[in-house]
Image (tube, rainbow over all chains, first blue to last red; front, top):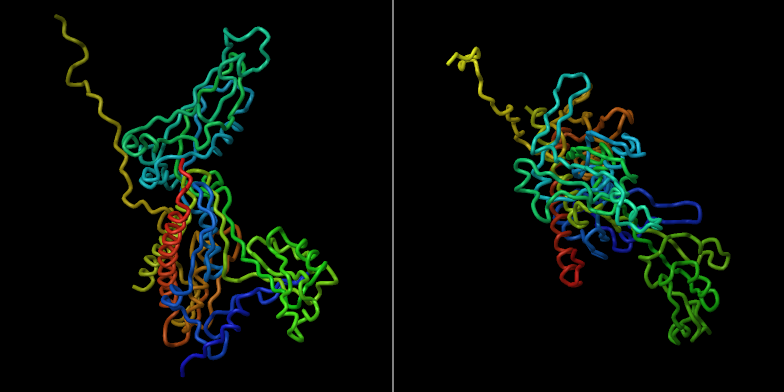
Length: 374
Length: 137
């Protein structure tokens, strides 16, 4: 028996999650085999290929916004989680403080340095290996720092008086040299094969050179060696390659009965600008009996112009005059992603990287399965 | 000329420190971990324990396995939040085994990843070509 195929209206109805004033309806995905009697819903790659769509809204170097349409929440969420916690990046991990006479304490200084986002050749970062830490029970020894697992930065600054400063000068930055220590003062020292990978634009450097690290006064000095290692966001947020990675579902607004005249204006005000538009009622609509527009030709009616920008504030559901006239919802399988990079990767590359990590994880676990099968 | 008290034979030339061996694999996700089949498993109903895995893989894998028509039940749980372990329970009908269903789940997820990569790259290239003036620097 051939499987039943649900009608387009039915499929559309299943795609919408209902949003009421206080509750939500039709929440879980139901596209699984056995859920709807007679329908198939088994995994079919060709069907997924046909159905799945990507739309780009914005693609700047460090911020991208795009829609993934036709995906399940479980998968979209996996990508989001991988973006935040499982894409490897480089960050300062070990600080060797030779001298620090500034007012900022060693541990605070170390913590601040760790959080500075670093950039460098992607190829080089992919070439780098993990730095294996000693296990707590002492069964495994630590790797020594090598060119393939540690990047060395130096921070050597001393503050002294500027002899040429004006006598009445008040600005400490002019009165003293090195009064402010910035991220740009971090000096990269390539070791071994790093010279091949991190050259020119690919050199390791802070993404933003103007991050203030510490303030000094004459006679104070900071002298430290910083070891950067490869890590993932799950271990420490400083390794996370994204500032934000989030998704929201596409809002859906349905006007079920006419909203006309002053009500239409008030209705439009319940939404962000551009979401609801006003159009005159045409004479054909007014001539149609039972449409609700009878005798209102030429008056303004509310129409949905662009639900994309709606915040789903549900403000319209609070007003008596719109009761039963509007239905709010969200499209279950339309994910509007927003990815903002901290600067190590380009934002669109980040998402591709996340897919790569997901595939790699699958592959690795699948390899582990062969042991069970044997 | 008086002979030196330090014999030449005793002198050792300096050698380089031992070269650390570069590991072979460069797997982005730490080291190899094992899947454990929990006690009480039969051919068609088994629970698998994944070490170091969380909701990321758990939920995605559950979705992929539930999409298999031969699977009667599939669910995942993280038994304790401070224990980095994730359990997946699979029950199938007699046309397949729980292990095969798990393997198919991984295969389907990987196929899905390929499609997403392909479509994402195409959409991005098209968008960049259309907007033309993509911000450089």
